[in-house]
Length: 501
Image 1 (tube, rainbow, N blue to C red):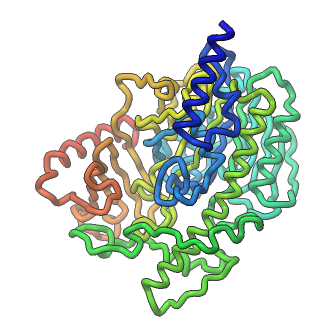
Image 2 (image 1 turned 90 degrees about the vertical axis):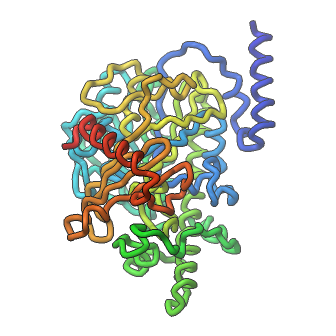
């Protein structure tokens, strides 16, 4: 038996090295040697960045992947699974974080906008894990206003926090809260505190759930000093629609009041230095290109520090014999526009904003290099954690564990469509809702109707098979009439199933 195990491990290791190259090398040998066998309940290390969009991950293969921005993150992906269709149900920070903790849509848990809060008395996955015998901790960005509940240990930023010399608020259970100013970059500080907690755990025999939430890569992008010159001599590839386009009737570039990349920069330019932007506003296209280069380089420099620290956490587990019994997850609270459609920020149901990048490594169950194409939502995360813990999933949670999907055993009744709703309503960012299937997306901007826009002009329909970058609105095209009827019917059904209205 011993010889057989050794042979299987060697074969998998060699296969991965040839198929995936050096990206899988750092901790591959001990991870690959793990046999798939029943084990104790896994630890859960849930690492979440802010706004780290899939276009800026190497393993998602977007236009920025050639810059190799996420070597350590890609290593974790090589050892586990990547979700290609993981989506946010409301693409803004507070609502997404509340949905992750509660397993509920925004209109059910009450955190629909940035101004809302998640009540400390609300049921959440941390409380359920505590009841199941897990030691729980959260370190880093919290953003839900009220005191974290369900955590044996919390050390969190208040609000957005700051990149340099951050203030964190530490507490144990319901005990007193202590504020400490930590020296250094927040990404390093949060990692240091997480590693300290792992080293000083009260009961090493108990399984743990540690949530590490980084402030990065939220704007304004302040990188570590050591990465300040990264990409200095690079000309970063632009999205094809950075400068807008001549487009069919109804397309957003013709009069739709959406905030563009340049507008956002001009309103808050003082927040985006160093270094300053030196460009001539008298040349609109040249200025837009210069804004793009500055934004994306600053963004990627901040990602570099994030990637380095994610690698520190993963390496700690491997070096301390915890790797094979820990589900390591890395994700972001939503997607983000990096100039696509000439847009900036998130919020909208377009793919760059909607998609949540998500990777998970758990060698007891997940084969290296696994890719999952099923539609997974942020309301499913809590159920996955409880499934790993062997805990009952409460009826009030609206998602579903995707543990079987990660092992290549997608249930036959798994969802084939998802419902999205963005509740905040501003002239440049109107509220909207919609449905995404595997082939189409239908969006209705209800916020525009309140400003007098004809309701028939508030719809967008995209054929994701023919137009994956969503550049052509086909809502008024005769060829899509039957598709449109079906999608509107499905949208109405989903709204009722999700208890929205």
